[in-house]
Length: 252
Image (tube, rainbow, N blue to C red; front, side):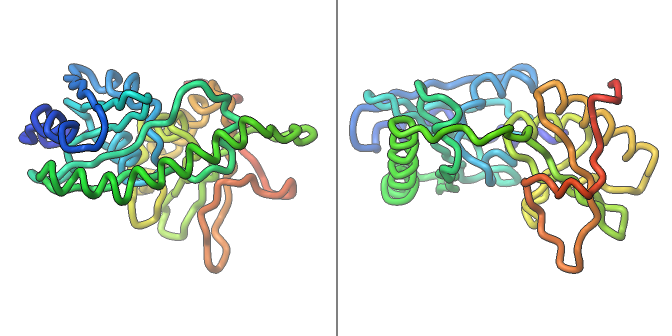
């Protein structure tokens, strides 16, 4: 697993960015000795795009969290495969039940230049307005909860086989993304999915079984399917007529 380039002066950049943002912000810098250490801090990152992809694909040796007086938090890491620039993402607010986030689009993070003034402008004009809109939707959902649907089905990860042996999986949560990555899947930005190549079919099958078993421990099911003529990676479960794999039947 590649490590994120450690030439970024992340600590200094985060402090400077906090100083440039409007309001009172404080910066907290972290060094990670082990790969799992990064998830304890990053669990609240509110992103299902390039920042979550970097979290799953790279060993982050460092990160920083900026916190405003009102509790708003920003997550900052170096930009993968680049000696310059950073990624900044909002972090989900505390104090809400998971149901309040259902149907709310994540205010995905942004890439910023290695210039705290320009970066602060991008955060204020782009990221924070989308974050405020998402928080307002969460607050509305919390104040007006909808009745639970009858007999709701479990969360699923859809794995799609392609003709060249490639297997693509669309993750639906940070836990799902983590389980897929730990079992051989890698993030493909072009497909917006985690992929597993079929050069070694026996190894591929073992990775699928192990991923399924790990997902099952979090109550996440797996649906296997072949693509349609114009395949679209979706996170919703297939119809009952399609075959499903029950990962709980396999042991790690």
